[in-house]
Amino acid sequence: MRMFSASIFVLIVPIIRAQVPHWGPCPEPEVQPAFTLKQFMGRWFEIAKLPAQFEKGRCIETNFTLTTDNSIRVVSSEILKGEVRKIEGTGVIEDPKNPAKLGISYSYVLPYSPYWILSTDYVNFALVYSCTDVLRLFHVDFAWILGRTRSLPDTTVEKARETFVNNNIDVTRMIPSRQQGCDKTL
Image 1 (cartoon, rainbow, N blue to C red):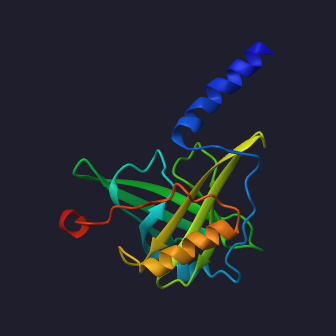
Image 2: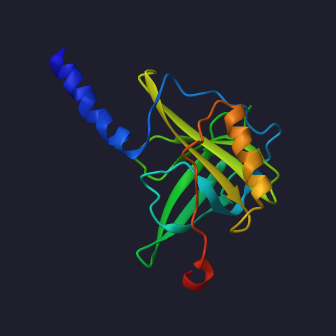
């Protein structure tokens, strides 16, 4: 039993260091009704986020391109230490009956991670949520407010935060993304 506990601890520590875990399983938020994947495609800028170990730079953006009816090319970029860093992945509709529940993977060896579109008007903003259960004892989550431009009105950001809260998603640690001076470098 001690060996099992030690093994679990070794596997969980990197996750805990990367994010703040929450007790219990992931919440089940409502997603965008009648979601249209084609309208969601294109360039999105990160406006605010829950801190993520894998996002350390500034000027973070993601470009989504439809490759087939339910497959997406995902290219994310950031500026870190003065250099543009890009990563390419694949997205899929995980449940055709609920197309706002996407899955995204940036590796051929890793499974798809949830990438749920909670709300979007397709032309200004999108609210995205991702959560992973760990043995249903606790969960690690990510949340993003995205915009078609590098900034959104404060009222839009506040309404977005309220949407997360109304879906039992803790955004007390949500921080604004750094989107200043991006066009000069990119």
